[in-house]
Image (cartoon, rainbow, N blue to C red):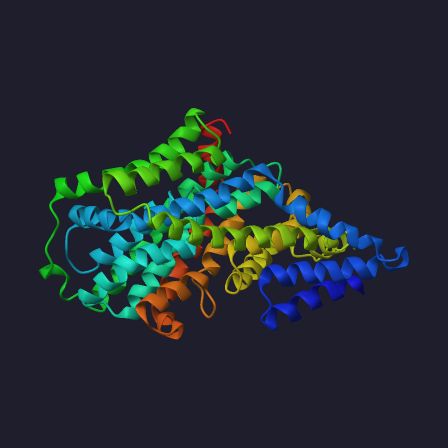
Length: 432
């Protein structure tokens, strides 16, 4: 009964408008108190202990650093320079600007690792440019929202860092390497329907008339941004620094680019950058710590074992269970961000993963792909919320466009499920 109350209380608080972190913590604390009421409420001492335990993990230090990196590169004008370089490569013509938007979003995913932040950075540059070229605002918002979903797959990924903390058998370097090929495939898959729809509906009538940036000048201006993922990922691969240390190195590199090279960041801008990234980091880490209380209540109330037995004994089989999890997490992904989904569901899904002997790294990539799909699935997709706000269109207007891109990314997820080596080949090749 108390276990049922845990989920009911969480859902009631969530639909009442209580922030996700507070809903997790309150529901968990109430159920811990009820489960230990015979001990004169001493069980509540577990609440502050698990609040700290959920937060006191070394890999989580990388999260505020990567959030800060994203904010610095957004302010430094790197996104605009990458756009000019991409346009110089692909040229002008029907369907080329959507291709550029997806390519730049994929590249920025190798710097920030946050889908909504990437949607804001790319959308601020690309949505206005696409509108000027004759693309409908709803289509532009759909392309940017879908493209930003590749961020949680292409390293560095905040979602992978959280997953590694929850699943000891999956290291951060292994997850980063495993997400590279599926992330690139997802981006390429999004390009196909984006270009096809643009040409089929004769969008971008004015794009061919817009000037094409000079290749070598745009390459020179974008070179500092192009080197950032090389520094982050190459440094980790070479063993120069851990993922957490790589995030710190990326912060100083971004400050150097913004303040010395491009001179788009002034000293007085640093306070605003630190404040914005600090607020976002606090929200993420507060959810992580409060989810520790929820996870403790799950284990204390004995919820995990009955749920695992019910699913594994359902008669669906391995593929049926995997299909059920896809449906569940894509649906939940419409309402919650990837970090929250991992914190809530991974403790429940770990016994199922062990029962079917799924590789933890491969399973983490599959879970992340499911969350990525949910990030641009209406009606409450977090990435689309950002891009639609920039384009000033209602989310309902994106349905006719975003459906094709959902289908293309779902095909990539199916390929990774059927061919696990798409995710596991690179980490094995790198020795993780």
